[in-house]
Image (tube, rainbow, N blue to C red; front, side, top):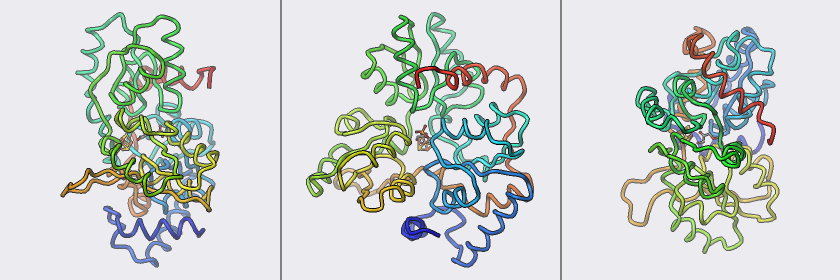
Length: 344
Ligand code: 13P
Ligand code: SF4
């Protein structure tokens, strides 16, 4: 155990909405050992997103696995020699791993872990939208189903979206973007491209409040503000740095500020605090003044990645990602373009 793990575990135990809430510390130690053993027995590697709980991220580190953003997770899974990839994140991340490594078995702690962007972009409706604009290059965010990716010309993650859209815009392409309207709007403002936008949003990032951040800055005047571009424009406008999870993590280390207000899922605090033990990290506020119902900065689907579910999935081979060979073949084309994109 390390100190970041200890600190964040306390917070996590208080807030966890998964079956682990009932675990004692001893149960948790035993489960961690069980998962480690199962990973070895099944020649499996654990690939975790920055938004998963501290216990999952620490386990990935201890077992030679990986923690990263959605682009890095995809790259790591494709490169690694393990026959089974255990993807702790949300379903589109497991599907991406399967598309890039069809010969491998891809397990998730639960296939129910999804994403509001994926849910809000039905493949048939999206295909119809594309058919209505045949002269447009279709760029989709990685937070989508394999079927939506299969309809795209390009797939991008938030780490690479600006570069790919700038490149297409320079070539004079008309662009159709889906599904995140806030990220789409941010890209339009940054690149000058006028994209047709699908009407989707992330239920976590949409909750951050610009006024709450400015009020918090009054209390911490030396703080810098870090914002993920899935947040609304007025929140992005108060940011010192806007970027994907890995870009925000890098900025947390590079900025001279001793205090950082962070507008993204609080799971990222595990790595931020570990890499910057002397800095103070504060969650950006999500509730407006006088709100009676408090939202939080934690993705409910990421929170479903528990040790028990991971152990069960490895033991029983349940929750295995299935993507048809036909979809794999189609979705691989725009995904591979992203991975091969030269300007990274
Ligand atoms: P990243 O691509 O930055 O990892 O983000 C994925 C995501 O789901 C953000 O909410
Ligand atoms: Fe999807 Fe938002 Fe959760 Fe990321 S934080 S997985 S975009 S719902």
